[in-house]
Image (cartoon, rainbow, N blue to C red):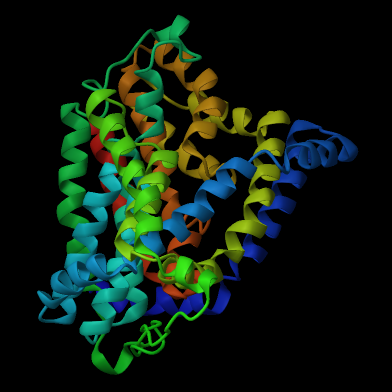
Length: 436
């Protein structure tokens, strides 16, 4: 049944979903028009909001570009390639490959969202080298595991409200991760998705005549390295000692960071870890730079599109549009239904404000007073925002850009499969937030 449903969804997305750059331009126009129509903002005021906020994600944009680049560098190192090839060799059929990449992506995304995006894409590419399986679904399966990230160890909303000094501490105090990430209802949602998402992907595997395959050459199989250094500069580029003198101290820092200081994962430390491991495992600067030149080709979408999303976020927050949307959903809620409507509103807001931390800053001032006034569970409402934020990433190509860059695909290639997940995971998560 799901295979039959996925065919028209894939065809529809292939025909009507534009390039993510066109998508962000359309979202910009919609956000601007809505701010003027519903919030009464003057056209020039909207233009100023957009322009002032346009560069607010520069740091984040660079972090995302580095996730793509450093992850590719690490995965293209000889030891990691051999390990991924070994795991991929365990997949004996297209269905097994789809399930394997989904589970790997789910586990990696639950640990850290950036880690999940890179590991899922790179493992999918390795599977495509060894198993004849629909490449679009393989990458879609890798991306579908990303939906779990905000209920995992790196969820920005639950970690924010568990941190002393967070901006709503005076209102709700400190809510530990035992009430959010490790609560019974959240762990149940995670466990069910760990079963449902791989099963859905497996049931969507197309027939052989409907599948789209790639060759090893299209995946960028490495050519044999026959370069022999002859000049002093070339000897430096091929020096293992030089790389180890930098890479090994970097790994020592990581050991101290995790085990002595007791610090956790964040985007910067994931990038640092990928880069230092890549430096050590590649062995020479020449090998690493060759991998860098290959990796950077997929980063154009991140560089050009993220500033537009920063502009959209500025319009949504500064005009009051995002707050008004949240307030409307609160107005039709009761204590029992508030988590459901919070989840739905967060999913809609996420299309325009695709940032967990940014979305919490917008919705917390509305949702938290509503939870207190209605007598609803504050921790559950916070997790409803978190899950809503993660849910519509299955439709929003913003977060897919690093994975698509690594895979060499376009958003329309995978979003038809993701659309099926959007409806299934939305029904499951929203129901469990209310019923558990």
